[in-house]
Length: 236
Image (cartoon, rainbow, N blue to C red):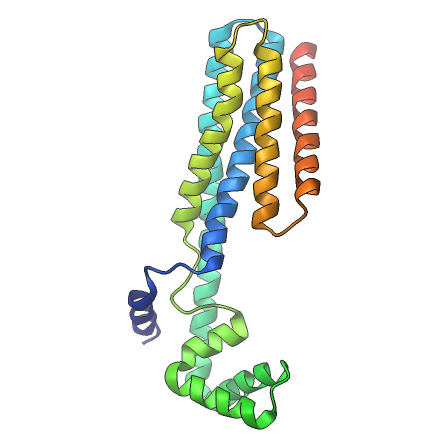
């Protein structure tokens, strides 16, 4: 019965993603891009510090870009799948509670509105009206903060991360392999700094955080990453 209700809800709303769903996909993309940039430049700097063979540098960077992209995608898929399973389990639990104790579920909805300053009489009226129209959808939204039929999509997150990690890693790879030997190092450094600045800006905007703090943090991490990997390559 729960599955049928979810299917009906999904058919009505399948073309309309919630803001949380959209932000989850964007979040996966921003994180994937940042990891793609830093892991690829890390390998490039390590290898380029140890050898001047351009083909070797390119193959090392390309291999790491592909490995990073697929690793990020699989990680996002596993993580978001777990979240989706948890959300479905919560819906199943609330559906069972509705069957066994409808009155307590209605009381929970009433308390939800009372806690937000609505009078007891009005809260009860709201709860009865909402429960009459869509009991399960109302309860899971109030108690679990879940919109029935809207679950985080692991495939969206995986493909977003895969694409963004690949795109992010291309910038340092292209700078290191396409620029002349005399300018490849400064070109790669500039490409990395510009890229992590952009991902810092996007992550702050998506997370409603401090833009300046996010950019500075990303720049520091990028500089430290390049510094460490360069000297690791020099040492060995």
